[in-house]
Length: 87
Image (tube, rainbow, N blue to C red):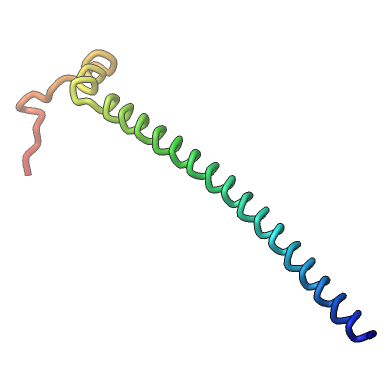
């Protein structure tokens, strides 16, 4: 009789422990899902920003723009033939 009560108590304790573990694991899966979504969104935003920065870099390094800056802002001009040093 006592061993049957102990067996029943152990069985109920085991079931309760497994149910608690299942709830905990479900909570972990949910948190990981949220974190994964957040990271994917951040990755998408970073890719978009990188694309924008690459476009800006391409715009800022256009040869026509650099020539205009060199000529107008810096007063530079193409070298004269006598200014070119050849090895």
